[in-house]
Amino acid sequence: MLPKTLAQLLKLPAGERIEIAMALWESLTDAEREAELALTREQETELDRRLADHMANPDSAIPWEEVGA
Image (cartoon, rainbow, N blue to C red; front, top):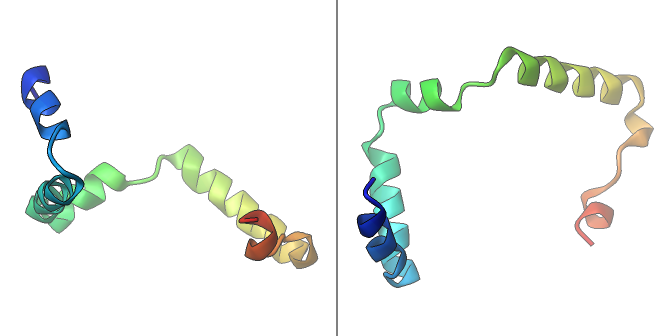
């Protein structure tokens, strides 16, 4: 995107920027979203490792109320 165009878009009110973002998101096909948001092998491996660790040690989890505080 041209820097000038982006700069102009960033000056719009929040509501208008949200509308544009949503329109852009909705313009993507499911295949495009899937392709762009696919996890790498390393990310999948890390998620699998974390899930296995949690399943083996469920008491080690910290409740959201404590994390978000």
